[in-house]
Image 1 (cartoon, rainbow, N blue to C red):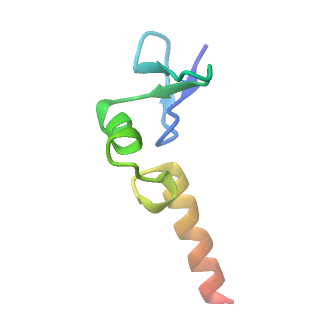
Image 2 (tube, rainbow, N blue to C red):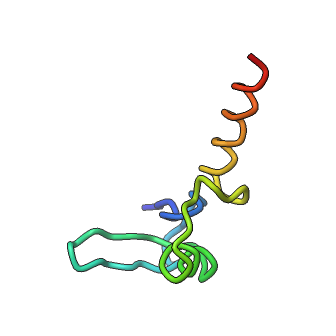
Length: 68
C-alpha cells in the first residue's frame, strides 16, 4: 500500500516516511522532515510553495488566468 505526503504530495512507499496521528484521529503522512516542519512549526500552506504539487498546480492556474 502506498500513500502520498500530506504536505508536498510525493508518493510514499511501504516502510518510508513518517506517520503523524493528530488528537482528533486524523492521520498525516510526511516524506521527510522538511514537509513536517513546514506544516507544523512554520505553519505554511502547500499551495504557496512552488516545490509542492499543490503549489505547481496553483501556479499553472494563475498563468492560465493571466493569458485569458
